[in-house]
Image 1 (tube, one colour):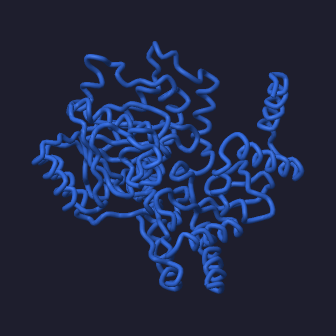
Image 2 (cartoon, helix red, strand yellow):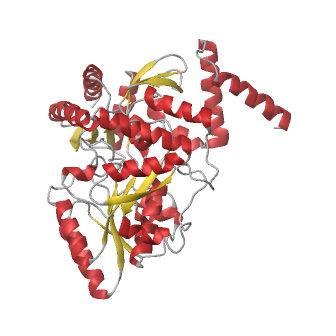
Image 3 (cartoon, rainbow, N blue to C red):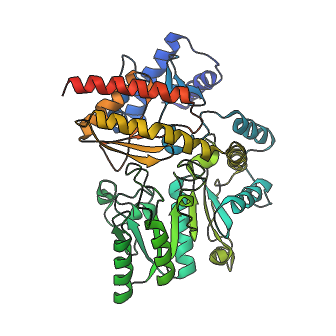
Length: 450
């Protein structure tokens, strides 16, 4: 492609971006072009993996716009979103107050100079200090969850001057090299070979005895640990909730052994599980907290790592630039996060997640009892829910069947036979009932073929 062709092609798409509506012919052209671009220039395997979507109708779904818990594809077909962008869309699609804040900031200045003080970064850091557990006071901003985990690892190492970590089997912490080292599944680790240079030990999630045994072994053999890193509730593993004594015991153990406790709240944070923070279910305060996904209100990408003033000292002195990023914590992202936090607190969205989860989970469990040949179980808290099936093929059929009926769900990255139910927290009870009815129809259809 020549420069002239690139100019023409980009101009055409700028015009499409500015369109407020599409004809059916335009929609179908976008679908075919998008499939071609993904196959030839982005990731063909990504398309193949999404067969539960692409095989569900005559035309592959190509998303276009949305509001609340509903979105539309380029042909104007409506879907109830029970995926929520993998936890990104707690506030739903295009929340008007978040969009408004970002638009206002965009018209002022999109990005900071990096040399002067940009006020919104300080405002957001102060807000996080006010709403995070315990004595957490300082924050650093980035653009994604995996970056926030990388920073958490770095903060822990800087403060402790130690290099070892304990994480969980089936954990998901991101795919950059440091966070990938903490992940608990071989599919994503093994192809890369050697990852993080320090020792990382994996224990079964929810097993406090295993955590204690590993801490004791490391102490006895002289391996120095910087931190213990867990998700409050494992998200990608399938909304796995630990026993109620797990987190309090882990907090006690880390204090006893002088190891930092790091909470990966990237997916559980800001209301998803029925509490503002996942660890609030057990009244546990971490030393370091990582958050991302819904922090940007579903409008801008932003992540953060947060900790106490004491632990933050090596991030400030002697070198305050030891952890920086040019684009992380930019003005647009911070404006989105400020608005998202405001809406979350004002509307007490975690309480909505709790009540809607209490309404939805028992009905999913009733379906699991009705179809024991299909289900292995249902897990979760709030609106972070996993439907576990006996085989991956069954999960595939459930996802495809729901999509044909206008409901978007997806599997998890570390548990191939688990389908997540993770809708925007603003989903209505009427929409939940519609999802349950369509799920029931799907299960009935699958059962007839077994």
